[in-house]
Length: 308
Image 1 (cartoon, rainbow, N blue to C red):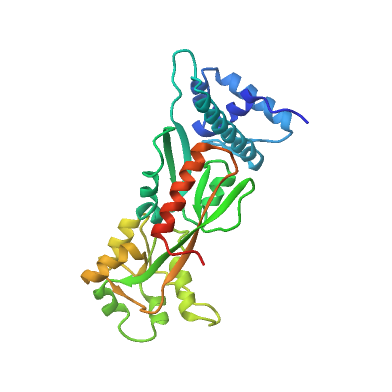
Image 2: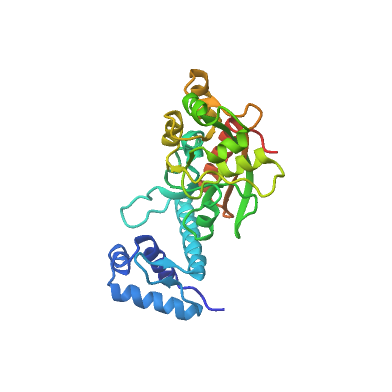
């Protein structure tokens, strides 16, 4: 079996992270020609195309495997050097370890950030958070872009472990004026189909899922109105609903204060939508990754509904 030379592997990672061969060459303090030669040599050694030569460059499916390996190797090396008290170079100190984590926007806006404050200060860590829908964060794990993710999938990505975090509850809400204008008469499911609706982005299906739950076994299943607004921030999403732009599903912790103040009204008193969340991370013996996982799992147990 052919070995993977570390200089070539690290060069591939630099190209993916920097986006171009020239930028990677600057970071690695070599010429762009040397970067190109290393990538070609690694592709010849593996017998696979590892990069799509686009702008920015993107790893192929095979390239994602090598990128993930490079990141895992770098994390393990930094952990070992820190435990041994080794410096990066003569007179230099070991810098903080960077941990890339994918998190959905609603978790970021509610319970996730407080969990990071519980991570012990030693060894020092830098967090690189990637905001992504909970149904798509596993893609970032597969691509090697992140080391851990909050996801809605209980099925572990290859090379990852998975643990249940709990459930995030969403409430169907609208402003009182919106309810009076669009939802005052008729069956709720039919009125919601025609009324303007808020979505986080084009991947957000929570409103569609809720509408189907209202309809039960009805065939064909109902579809949400084409009159759809997109608001890609959790705070802006809630504010837009309170302003009367549309109805939508809001995290319970955001909705309750506005319900109490009368800024929002609950559209279905007996219907909520509970989204299960899971923590997936690389299967590595990394003290840094273990410390973050412990803090996230502890906080989730306090802030989320228990797993089913």
